[in-house]
Length: 181
Image (cartoon, rainbow, N blue to C red; front, side, top):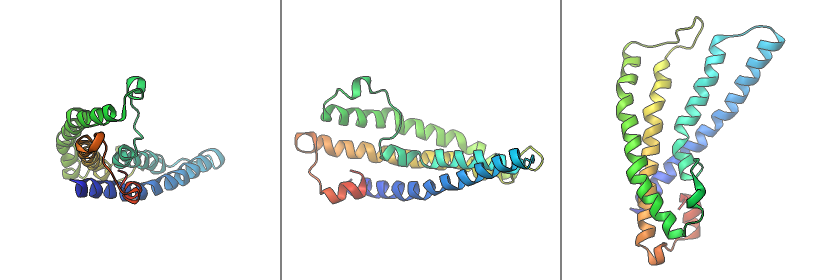
């Protein structure tokens, strides 16, 4: 189970790092759009669409990475006051009862959406828009699959902590930095 957690953490860490570079690309695209729109008085539909395509990709594909680093918004009214063991139990139950099933539902329900976009070679409905919209739509199940995997890793990691001594597992500090455990 430890190797599964480390493997998923490694995968989402690498993918998150790669996707983080898209934020730099997004900044360049937005700057170009602002420059061309306000200084050159010219606007390109494809550039505007590229902005939200990049943002959606960053958001969807980076969701697993964000979960790995505990960066998702949560209601901390009670959670912050819990003991470490109670937090681990909440993470375990929350992952298995809410996160994993929700991710599976989104993956399953988005399949026809993506398949239809591929089958019809869907493009932007706007003149001058981007082609291959199915690539963007394919980010939905891909992103939720990475989130699903990270949810499983969080559940396994929590279970390992629950079963460990005093609710916590002894770990090599190098492993915790490398694998996020």
